[in-house]
Length: 250
Ligand code: GLY
Image (cartoon, rainbow, N blue to C red):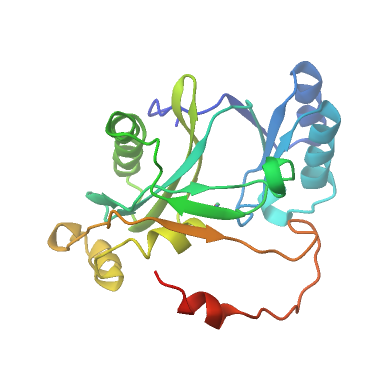
């Protein structure tokens, strides 16, 4: 992101526990602590106090709770603003965008709990107007995809842009080379094309041959999680009532 001038929060990365803790002593809370590897969307801690940040760093770099993903830790500037997720299909040169969606990361009513993989999502986003969409495309999406090509990183598929709209404009919080959960639950019902064909043609650098259209309908998803999530929780509860949900209109 630095190399391609893609807007993101200030950050420093650490493999060494002492160096990371020293950096926390010098900084001012709140901090964002991230496992630098894949953690299924659960490797981010938003820490209001230095104590919480110390604990998160310790869990990753000392206790090894996040395995390989937590062997390198990113301490990042705390950004404020609404988040949104944009998922693109990229074929190595060309791209198409699914409808933008908004994920709700924190557990509990009023966003008072820890960050989770996502407690729900909806699409489209009423406040995402044309001007902001264009800014995101010009400042973030295209420089990212151009950067991938310039770095000669081969590959095709879905690229997930996790963004925050700050007072300084849109900034990247994270990328993922996968669909988002629960974003996918709201963007795929709105997608009007043939998903198999899109992904298949993306692998052959041939996205231009496919129809790609998102409907202007709305879609919402609510996650019901077992008590304790995103920490340890009881598994095996029976889920019932899906037939009644499916019988509802829309
Ligand atoms: N909803 C967050 C993610 O899929 O990473």
